[in-house]
Amino acid sequence: MTALNLPTPDRRASLQRRIRLLVAATITYNVIEAVVAITAGSIASSAALIGFGLDSVVEVASAAAVAWQFSATDHEAREKTALRVIAISFFALAAYVTFDAVRALLGIGEAEHSTPGLILAAVSLVIMPFLSYAQRRAGRELGSASAVADSRQTLLCTYLSAVLLVGLALNSLFGWSWADPIAALAIAAVAVKEGREAWRGDACCPH
Image (cartoon, rainbow, N blue to C red; front, side, top):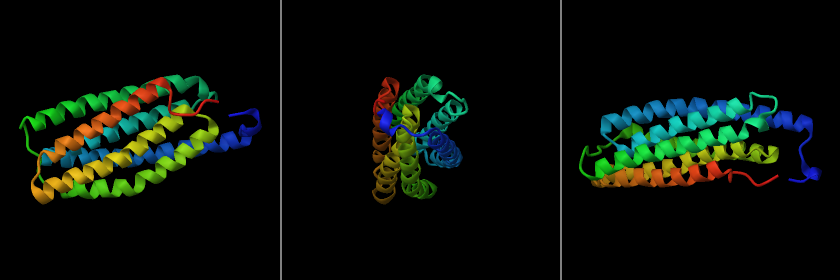
């Protein structure tokens, strides 16, 4: 980003307010998503659904880190710490989901049909892309790597919604219980990739 296209102070203030509002919306939705997914996943013994719910918890932690960063006047000073929190959240998610998925593949707890899980995955598949796009656009214009990283965390939820929907549908329609932990492992793999990029600070183009 060159001096010619740096946002004006008024524009920067507007972008920061927009990011705070988007972060608040993301936190609110993900708290609801986490409660529904983890509850439904526990009832159905679904590793993928529980993993999806835990990803929502990670998204709350990620969004909270960005909210903390932008609560300061000099938000750039807190950028590295916020990125570290986001990255560690990704890694923790991947570790737990992998463990639970492997247990499921070994036959410890077979996933059952979950109507709430199917509905939740479909709703998230519609809502999350809009939140992610709006925050990513504001973050890039502001030059904030943490805001962009958090938007990618939200975008990850979109991909995971699709993976979860397929896994739950295959299990419900054909009784393929292995589809659930396989979907969970896909969630874990993407989480590791995003965590590495957040740790390196690759979420945003350089200034």
